[in-house]
Length: 299
Image 1 (tube, rainbow, N blue to C red):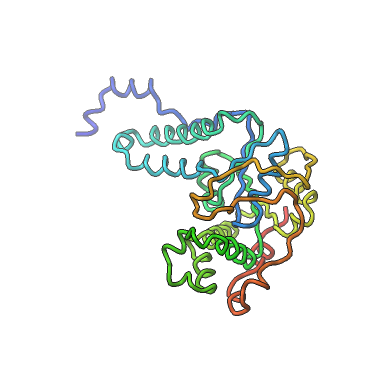
Image 2: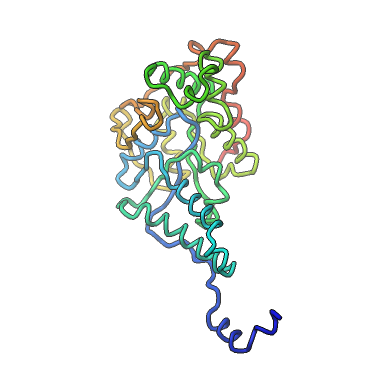
C-alpha cells in the first residue's frame, strides 16, 4: 500500500524540493576558543589577562554549552521534529545550534572569543560536530591537593553562608576528610572536571587541549601566555602581569561561595597550600599532577 501511494506527481515534487544538506557554520568573523579545566587553577586569572588584549573577548562562566545541550535534548522530544523527514530534521537542528552560537556573541565587537566553561572538555565530540572542526581548549590545571586546600580556605571564610555541598551532606561536611571527599566526588566541582579531563585524554583528545599548570603560570606568566597564543595560533600580545584588572564578574552568591572568582591584581608565584592545610592521611588519598604530566602529549 505504501508503494501505491507514491504517484509520479509526488515523486516529481520530491525531486523539486530536495532535503537540504546540513549547512556549514556561518562565518561570523570571530575565532572561537574555549577555556575550561580544573577549578581554583587560574582560569579566571587567565581570562582577565587575556582581556588586556583588545582583540580578545573572554566570558565569565558561560551558559553557552548548557544552552546548546538544552536545544539538542529538547529537539529530540518535539513531536513536530519527530514528524519531519529525518535528514531535514538533522539539518535544521544543526542550523539552529550554529545560529545560537552566532547570536550568543552577536554583541561582541572583538574578533577573538574565548568561552569559559568546565563542561567543554566532556563535550568535545558534540561541539566539534556543531562547529564541523576540531576545537581548541585552554585547560588550567593544578595539584589536586592544592585545589582541595583552596576550597577548604574559601569555605572556612564563610561559615554563615553554607555551600550547596554542605547543605546536601551535613554530616560528612563536619570533617576535612569528609569535605575533601565531597569536593572530589564524580558530580562535584573538583571530581567532575577531573574525570572529564581523564576521559578526554583516554579518548585521544589531547591535541585539542592546552594544559596550563597554575604553578608554572604564576611563576612564568609571559612564557605561559606565549604558549597559549601559539596554541590558539593568534599573534602574541604584551601583557601587564603586575596590573590585572578584573573584567569578568560573577555573582558568587549564586554558587553560595562569596569570593570564589576574585583574583589578585598581580600575577606572582603562590607557594603550595596543601602541606599546611590537609592532614597527611587525607592528602595521600588524592592525586597531584600525575594525570596531565603522564598522559598529555606535548604539542
